Length: 347
Image (tube, rainbow, N blue to C red; front, top):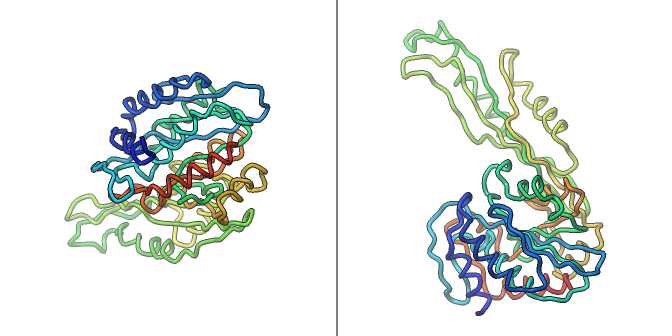
């Protein structure tokens, strides 16, 4: 089959997060057809490894799942279309192709894991780290996230916080007897909207931090002045900050619009990862692309590998701006170039 047909075969298999079994079956069957690979399945995660005499081990990883959506899977005008084509089944198809090559100057671990697109605590990669950490041992890792064939270094961390503003209930006909907590949202939201992104330059790439209000709640009844209002904030954090630094900064930034009875609760955190472009193998990957690297916008599992002491970067086929949209598409040319660079990098 052509590379487009290979990619189409994966796109046609529905694999919304939590429902990856059928695709995991397909991946495992194909990998087990190669005698040089040791293949193991842990839940809906599939790991294939070469086990030769080389001292250096490279990990190439990608997630099996997609976000929900309609799937009009097809090949048309020299490109594969459909849910998950860019994020990231086109890259998975190339990974499967390259995994069939028996002899390389390095050992390679191929990781196909479940549940990346939902809460991090559900991640199949974390499941592997807990149950079979030996399968994730390596010297360097590549995540096949869509990057348009450019190396996207590191990733941002993400901090989610809930701010609870207080007020006093009253009848809406007599608001002077209470205090409207929803009205108190105005200066808080103005403060968030006025945020000027902090830019951090690391390893030759720029990480741009962000702060956004992503949800607002409030109100008791249509005739009651509300005594509470809630806003949820999402803060994207550069790799030079850890959780404590990020939480401290956010509290201080919001302090001018908060009162003593207000409350800030931090709901979750996913750590950032440094660019690691000083790593010799990652620098070589950048050279093979012929394009300057850029910082990863958003969070990816490069952070999971970084937590385990494995330098990692994002490198995949497909436009990252098409991920999670109804128009995911990857061209034959993009697939060919991805296969060329990744193949040369593996040797």
